[in-house]
Length: 279
Image 1 (cartoon, rainbow, N blue to C red):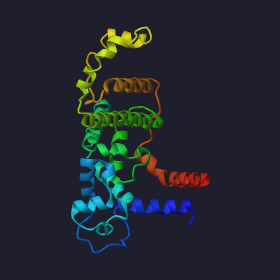
Image 2 (image 1 turned 90 degrees about the vertical axis):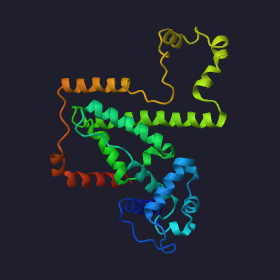
Image 3 (image 1 turned 60 degrees about the vertical axis):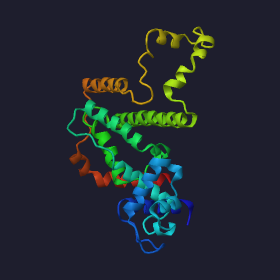
Image 4 (image 1 turned 135 degrees about the horizontal axis):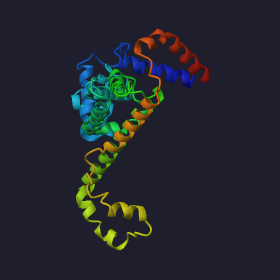
């Protein structure tokens, strides 16, 4: 079997497991625990100690079973991590779909922030290869729904939701790093910056950094929120301008769900053909 064929087969197994269609396992002893218990144990371990702490053995120890028992429910660590990520996304509170776009998108972004604070280990998961699970897709759908009928083009909607996600997740990753360093060094955020007063007095050169000096003199940094909130207002203001411009220009609306379904099978077949042609 070629490397590509093996990758396709592995992807099929992983996706089937996420959607409850995995074949019956052929390894391991008769189940003493449930698949849900395995997944929840993995999440609890990752929440407490980070993703690196999760292995088949460590999860088995937490459940007080042998490692081989886990293979009755997951085919290895990779499949376990897929299930953990998708289950963690089930913990995401979806915004009310009837909210106006700005309120809905802000609530979506703040819930994403809170969600990553609850499960900081998700920062160590490759966001470009999230498992294709139902709960991951529920969260993606909720983000797109906030903007799909605003007059923005389809490409711009996808682009903006991606920008919002990356903004929030990047900020959450930075906060996680700050908290880890505070634990390791025993110095919190405010104490660290108070300890740097000598730098500002003896090393900072206003002539070398004139833009920074102008911002500081104008109070730009007077209301520093610290690392425990995500600043969204400026980003949302920018998106509002883009929506107003699209509406003023009379942009064509994104096709309705019914219109898309009328040609859905044809479009899927076309995209599969194009994808396979590039392989």
